[in-house]
Length: 436
Ligand SMILES: NC(=O)C1=CN([C@@H]2O[C@H](COP(=O)(O)OP(=O)(O)OC[C@H]3O[C@@H](n4cnc5c(N)ncnc54)[C@H](OP(=O)(O)O)[C@@H]3O)[C@@H](O)[C@H]2O)C=CC1
Ligand SMILES: N[C@@H](CC=O)C(=O)O
Ligand code: NA
Image (cartoon, rainbow, N blue to C red; front, side, top):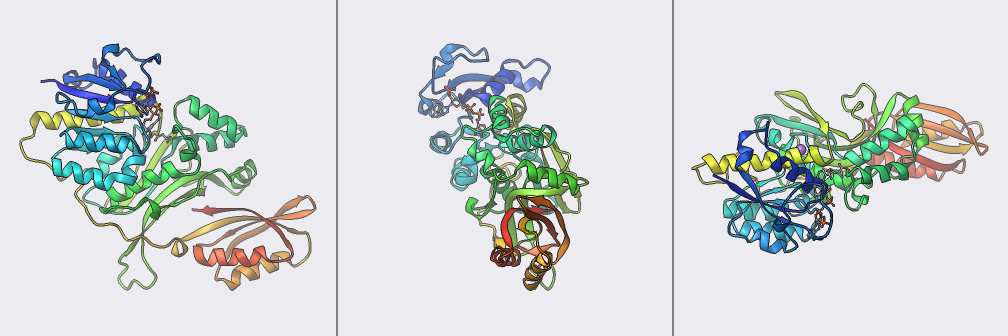
């Protein structure tokens, strides 16, 4: 039996996918039953790095998704439209879907999964989070019996690559971003990487799987790495931390919960000073890692290449293979309880001001006596207790003070910071970063 695959997009990931499909030797034998039947691209003239017959290429992607002979559509064009419309049209024509597109799933997953369930087809997205790392399937299957408490991930390869090279080489942000684009790690518009939006898409998908409910993307608090300077990276190092862009989804157990029952989820993406002893602290370069904490399993961490052609294609082709295996063997009607998305309700989300974390703050103040006392008083007035406060030097005749808080409520911290910014001795709040 041969299963016919239509690939939409032959860029970084599409090329890697076609390479694996065209070279099945030494891989799973079921690969020999897959055939690339059509390839949709924007430009027919572009040279391609993979040997696919030119007769299979077309710019008419609508014709691919409605072609009666195709079984599986692999969407690798990226972006929201026309990806969303093409996926929905393919589903309407009874095609199974494989996609690496976290942007479309995080925004339109509800209508896509509803349509797929109604039509009895699968939508597989292993490549959409963590590139080549198997994390979507494990969350759906192997970890499904656990009560998940928290998912913490380094889920954007581009920003991790940038932060790593800034730390190890003192490299310039713009230069390293250009390298990440050249290496095929970055999104078509790298703003999505740098401003944390890509990581927000990914944690929304992970949270939905881990906590069994739908997530509205606007409920994910999102900050990127643009404001992380080499100064902060150096100070973090001196304090025993490394800076990582973390995506976090965790149960929020309110102070007034009598039985410790979680009521809401906290969803956030932000740069974080991570103690060097934390399991995610040594995940460098384009590598991603996702730490899942649940009951009764405890901690489990998934680690591997989070972007790039071959790694991402590995996840894409594994999804194609899973669908082919199901088509070959399955007699039961779908939705399959472990492979399809059946939850309908939206998760309740905790407001960001109630989130509890530590903070690192660097301030420039007049170099006069009593300033440290004034800062301490302002924080104390807002229930923010300090773990450490040090004057680290003078710059431009101003004293530079670095402080780290204990775990505090975000809303209290922001109120304290507002009072501090109004102190006449404070010239500038140079940096604020959350601390694990
Ligand atoms: N790059 C990576 O490491 C990873 C990427 N992803 C995701 O995979 C998807 C693909 O990314 P990537 O391969 O990097 O993207 P690229 O920009 O390298 O490739 C996009 C491909 O889609 C084609 N394309 C785009 N828009 C259209 C359109 N409107 N009509 C026809 N063809 C179109 C392009 O055609 P043409 O070649 O003719 O220009 C190109 O072949 C994205 O969703 C991305 O987020 C996920 C994990 C990792
Ligand atoms: N641009 C993304 C690609 C993979 O999802 C990243 O850098 O992680
Ligand atoms: Na993955």
